[in-house]
Length: 138
Image 1 (cartoon, rainbow, N blue to C red):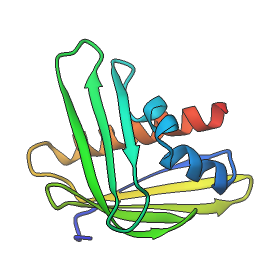
Image 2 (cartoon, rainbow, N blue to C red):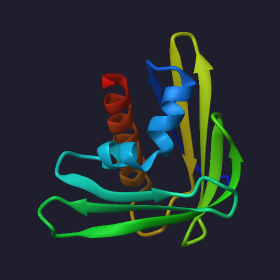
Image 3 (tube, helix red, strand yellow):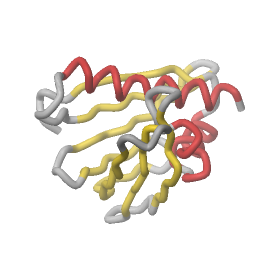
Image 4 (tube, rainbow, N blue to C red):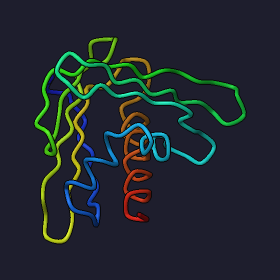
């Protein structure tokens, strides 16, 4: 992971096992993997193994824009975290920490060069906040 990695986090009021399941299972990913209510994640697949692929389709609900986030897993510590590399070579690491009465989810990602750092941080934090909202509601 490069030195310029962006760190975001959220505390979820669920045990690590539940958080892991909600964060890695495609049927849950499609329910929370978008930063705002005008976006959606109509499909996701996840082969949670070293060398396995993660893919999530993210789209504006009005159909004006969409993209596939595709990555390959490089490290997995089942129930605790993982690292993957996106198609453009950037790395992402997710860590789950068992906390008193909940789980701290920390995501570290290498930014891309097209958009301002603040915009990327806000977008990824928005997705993580949406995850927290979804997971806490279960």
